[in-house]
Length: 174
Image: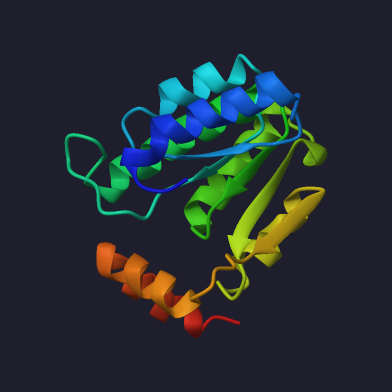
């Protein structure tokens, strides 16, 4: 999922692929920093869709996305709880120990089995995902492959300077 200008188009294409070609194993990503995400999650669960929840890293205007990290985190937890309560297998994409702990706590409290979700983390983002993925049957590290990885990462860092701190902090984790 890219920036908010592509959200509705991505959802529309996703629904069309599933409807026209029966691609029921295809999932979609939603981003908790967008105001619309909780409603999108509710609508996608009616399909039912497999969803990977992430926070979002693009620089969005305050009329589209939560400007404060606390609000993004609060929405992440709301959406995560909705997803895990749905009975559909989902991916919880985060490097944030607080979000990982909130997911594990909710799953244990609600009796969500280890096979009902997985944690998803970027390769090289530190040990947090690998360490905490044992709370699920599967955890996975992934990386984006594009023709020019340097340009991709520089664009992401330029769009949201707070990502620079995230990258630097995780370079020194084991």
